[in-house]
Length: 136
Image (cartoon, rainbow, N blue to C red; front, side):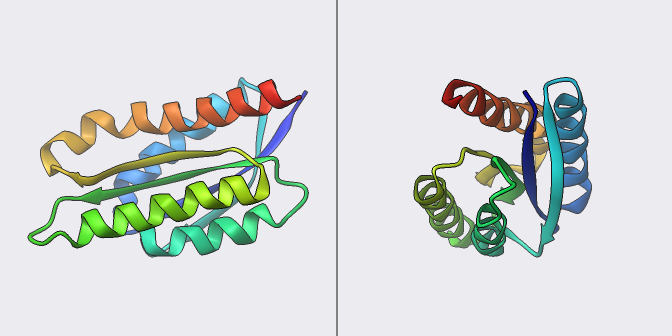
């Protein structure tokens, strides 16, 4: 059985997120997942709204959210990450559709971003697939 999914992407770290997207696309092709929507947003605070708009679509079975929230000089990223991820979890529960969270951070250090890009993206899309399969 094939499942239709959507991807929400943060453009603040576009180079890294494009690499994450590549990982999700590659996995999806061989595992019965059709990516039918890809939505880029400025950053993590905009991800819940974009995600909700996508989950309202009855054709979408699940979603993956990708991005990076690196450590800054203040706790802004930590607060933003907590708020965004909480909103994403609440949307998953509201719509009863799985959402894989592939957001590095919050407060990830720049020197460890690169080695975690592909594993986090892969884990997020695998989680969505697992939840979709176990629900049917």
